[in-house]
Image (cartoon, rainbow, N blue to C red; front, top):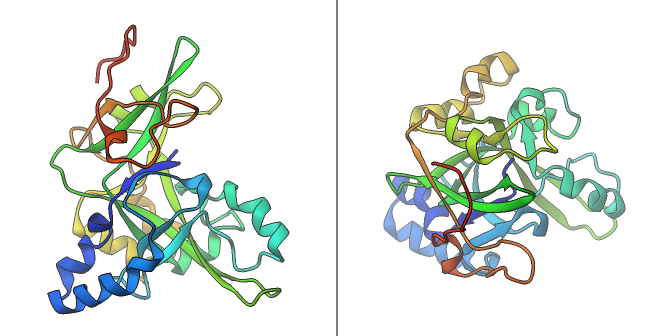
Length: 255
């Protein structure tokens, strides 16, 4: 799964900077800064942080969306709160079937740029957090879904997204071994601009047209290391040191 990420503002803006001029980017940074509290050194999907994403409608302009997709048909605030924590991730195999995702899967897909993500490895009754990142230092480009929900009681328009997941590659099968889950998972990561563009293309609006993209990232692209606790009294919180390597005595896993 993918519930915890690292995503600095510079990383979130990288796609916009690649495709647009510097003057426009400078104005954009000023405009978007109020939407973001700080760099996300560690952000949990369960706190529904605001992240800049790229939508099908505006594929080169970053827009502020909250993590945890709220479907457009959600009835009221109570229903929103009930569903919000259940839509942080969306399984690629079922996005065209699940009511929460099927409309977004057809025509509301997005890209999410992050520095890396965190996942727990279970060993001898304990969970050890790992930080996973690209070995070449480039951002991870994740496939996502987005939606807009109108709160009829307040008139507020809520923009939200979900991270799509797929089966794990060899590295993630070693790390993501939660005994409560049916299988190891990982976020849907695009390794080329071409695959990201195919994900965003309006013409690819069926499960069959996207099937070839629902593959785990090739082995050898990602690296990983253990980090300090992400939750509980010993958690470091949203500080840059949270992704630093920490060794645990007795942990027997070779990455």
